[in-house]
Length: 337
Ligand code: AHG
Ligand code: MN
Ligand code: MN
Image (tube, rainbow, N blue to C red; front, side, top):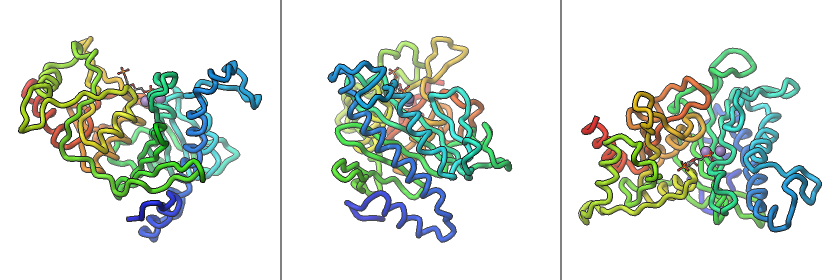
C-alpha cells in the first residue's frame, strides 16, 4: 500500500515486487515519464518569467529557443521517452501522425499516448494546467509499433495518469491496482506519496461544464443540468458550478472532492454531434483513473473504456466523475432519447 512520504520511485519498485513476472520495463517507462514531468514542471513554473524578464520568447537567457509551452512539453516528453527501450511507438496531441522510435534506439513492448500540455489556453492566466498519459501494450508482431497499437480501447490500458502543475505539482496515476497521488517536493526534486489509494466520493455537490455551449447540447443534458440547479436539500442540490477550463484541473478537483465533469456532444449539426475532448489521451486515461477510484466515465451513449478507437485524434463527449452522479446523468439521457 505504501506509506505517506515515500518517494514515487520506491513505491513503484515495491509495487513491482507484487508481480514476480515483471520485467521492470513498465517501471523503467514510468521513471522516464517522471523525469520528463519534473522538467516540464520547472518550465511551466518559470513560464510567467518569460514575459516578466522581458525575454523575447524566441531566445531565453540560456540561449535556448523558448517555444510555446505545448511544443516544449511535447519535445521534452519525446526526448525523455525515445531512447529508454521501453516503447515501440508514441502518439501526441501535438503531432498529426504516430511518433516512431528512432532506428538507433532499442524498441520495447509498450505504447505511450499523451497530451503534453492540457489546458494550455490558460497558461498566460497562471491557471493550473497538466500533462495526461496513457500506456498500452504492443499488440502487433513487428518490432516497430504501428497505428494499430495506438488504437486500443481504454479497458486495455496498462497504466494511465496525469501531472497537474498547480499550487503544487502532483503526479496521479494507476497501473490497475488503485490510484495514488504524489506531490513534488521541489527542494529535493522528488515526487512524494501524498494521496494513498484515492477513492472518489460516490456522489458530489459540484458540476463542471462550459454552460456557454448549453444551447448546442441535447435535451437530456440540458434537463440534467437544470435538475442540478433545483433546490432539494435531501439530494444536496443545488450543486455548485466549478469550471476551470483545464480538464486536468477540473478532473483532479472532482476526483478528490466528488462531482461530475461534463463536456457533452455539440449538436450544432444534429446529424453529426461531436465532442471536443480526445479519446486516446484525454478521455480514456482519465476514465481508467476514475474507474480505479470508484467513479464512472461515459460518452452519454457508452462507457468510455469500451469505445474502440478508429482514429488517433478521435473526439468524444465526456461525462466523468462520481458514480451516482454519472448514473443519474445517464437516466436523464435515456429518458430523453
Ligand atoms: P488542450 O489545452 O490540451 O487543447 O485541452 C483543452 C481542453 C480541456 O483542457 C478543457 O476541459 C477544454 O479544452 C475546455 O474547453 P472549452 O474552452 O471549450 O470549455
Ligand atoms: Mn487537453
Ligand atoms: Mn494539450
